[in-house]
Structures are given as structure tokens and as C-alpha cells.
Image (cartoon, rainbow, N blue to C red; front, side, top):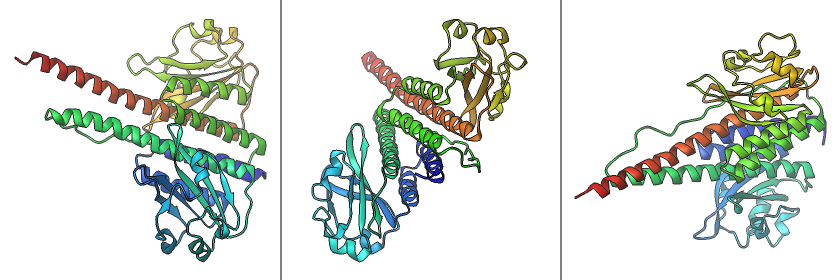
Length: 390
């Protein structure tokens, strides 16, 4: 993979992750996913198809670059149309118009498609659909290209799983209240994220690939668990290892006390963690303006709330990054180095991406927990009222 490709993959995956995790429109997310996949691999077109569990047909939900005639060619049977993909395999079919796994070979030929790359779209541990990319030329795809679009397909599964979960929980609560004549007021809260600009300098190709894979691992964890704390611990662990630093920590602002409450940490001693709560207005407070702040020399910087304890911990430099959600700083990601340390723009870009993903995870967890609380509250309240009836 060339240097420019690897940096572009890191950028594309981050931007797609941000879009998918923060979007309130599932259709816009899926459309964007197909468009970006087609652009990344520079192919003729693409489509995203979901399995209809009742008919077992593949329902087309998003396309890019395909003619109206081809899109309307007919229904696809999930058991006949490259069925191994729904068993979790990736299939690359060259000369696809002669392959028996293709249902509409004449239509494929007429559309000018030679090679078809098909990848599974998974949610909740099972294949729910496929992402297909179509090349006009006979083509082989590299391992890195397949890795990228497989990661994008996983994001599609994540978006669908999140949407289904949100819909299911909302329906439960709405149904419960409607049964007793109560209507929910207001629309779902939209989580909007600020966009981070990438540096013009392409950086190091291998480093960019590592950053892409780290973001992929984090989003895969989000896909597989509702436990936000587990994702937070994965984030600080991967940041510490990738950046080759002493430690990292994620903290959330307690709006009542203005303290920075610890969510997860790696590499910090119990003594340092229990020294006393850092405060948002006393501990590198510039981060609250939404910009990364680098403390190059912790021994002489007055912006630290606990300078003596920081030196005793063996921390020489601190990079403090804002965690932004709903256009507000809700916490900080801090990276601690045992030596005086400078960071490249690419390093900071990766860390900002991780901090933004952390913000989305935190807000998603809050919304889910609130819905669960509302369900429990209303169930308990209605149960109590029912028991009080004469």
C-alpha cells in the first residue's frame, strides 16, 4: 500500500466512523457508506442489501453508480446470490457474468460489470446483509483494500444495530405510556460532532495503517458490547500502546462538582489516581475551549493542579484533548509521557478521533441508560398504581 493510500484509509475510516456513530438518519448513513466505499476502491458502483427475514430475499437499501435498469432487474434470493457471504465469507468474483452464483448474469454484463466484491454486513453476531462493490474491469483487490471495506461494512452493521436498538427501546416506552394514555413529548436527542481537519502532510504510511486498525478495533468493540466502560478501557489501552507513552486516562466532567471523574486509565499508580479529584477549571482548563493542549514540561508548567504529585508519578509531558459531544466539551483524554515529548499532527489527529469516538460512546450510553431508567420508572409507577386500585 502506498503512503498516500494508507493515510487516505485512516482519514476515510475516521470520517465514516464519526458520521455513522453520530448520525440520526440511518438512510443517510448507509448511503454515505456505499458512496465512500466506491470512492475508496475507485470502482464503478456499489450496493448495500439487507436480508428480509420473512422472504429471505436481499432488499436493496442503498446504491451508488448503478443504472436504474440494473437496480430494478429483479429480486435477489439470499440462498442463491453468492450465499457464502451470509456465512461470514468475503467473495471476489472475476468474470462475474459467467459465474453461477450470480442470479442476473445477462443484466450484469449489460451493466458493464466484470468483477464483483461481496462482503458480509453483520450485527449482533450474525450476517444481516451484504456490501457489494462492482468493477468494470477485471480486477484483484489487495488485502488492505478488502480490510478497509470490511471495516466499513462493520460500521454499517453497527449503524443498523444501533438504529434497531434505539427503535426497539423507544417503541417499548412509547407503547407502555400510550396504553395508559400518556404521549412522549419531544424528538430523540441528536448527537452532533465537530469535524477534525487532517494535516496536509501525509505522514508515515505504517503509522497511518496502525491508526486505522486501532480505530477499527475500537469500533468493533462498540459493535459487540453495550458496556461503555469496556470500550473506554480498550481506548486507553490502545492509546498507551500505540503512542508508546507511560499512561493515558479518560475523565468526564461532573457538572455538579466541576470535578473530572475518572472513567478509565492505564499505566497510572493508585497513589496518583487517589491524590484528589482534578477540577475542570484548575487542571489544564484550556482544553475546555475544545482544543488539544500540550504540556511539554510538567516540572515548570503552572497549569497543573497537582504539580508535585505529577512529578512524583514520573510524568514529564501531558497531552490533554477535549472529549466533545453535542457540541460541548464533556470530558478529557489525557496522554502522559515519562519523557518530554512532541507529537506530530497525525498523532494529534488520531487522538482527537479517539476522543470524539469516546464522546459518542458516552452519549449513546447515557441515552440508552436514560431509556432503560424511564422504562423501569414507568413500569414501577404503573405497577404501584395498579396495585392501589380498589
